[in-house]
Length: 150
Image (cartoon, rainbow, N blue to C red; front, side, top):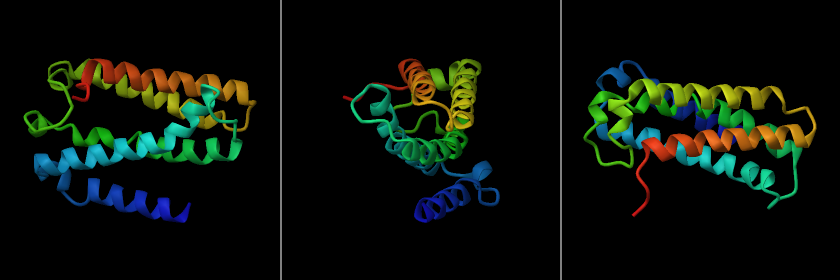
C-alpha cells in the first residue's frame, strides 16, 4: 500500500506541479491521463470481477482498491485540456464538442465512486451492486467519448 501511495503522490505531483497544467504540452497531458486510466482499470478490475461472480468477494481488496480509485477518479480529467483535442488518443471529438455532457459523466462517476467509498463496511451484496453502478458509469462514458480499440 505504501508503494501505491508513493506512486499516487508522484503522479499527482506530476499532474499538478506548479503551472504544469496550464502550460503542459498536449502529449504529456495525454500520457498522464492515460496512466491514470490504466491504474483505475488495474484497481477496478478485481472488484468488477467480484461483482460478476468471477472472483470471490474480498472485503479488504474492495476497501483498499476503492480508496485508490477514489483518488484516481479525481486525476484523469486534468488531462483533457483543449490543447489535447488533436493529439493521438482514443478520446473522441465529443469530449470537446460536448464538454458539458463529458463533465456530467465525470461527476456521475465520481459521485458513485464516493458512494462506494462510504459503503465499504456494509454487506457484500450492497457493495457489489454499487460496484456494478460504477462499472456502468465507466462504460457509459467510454461508449460516448472513447474510440474502440482497432
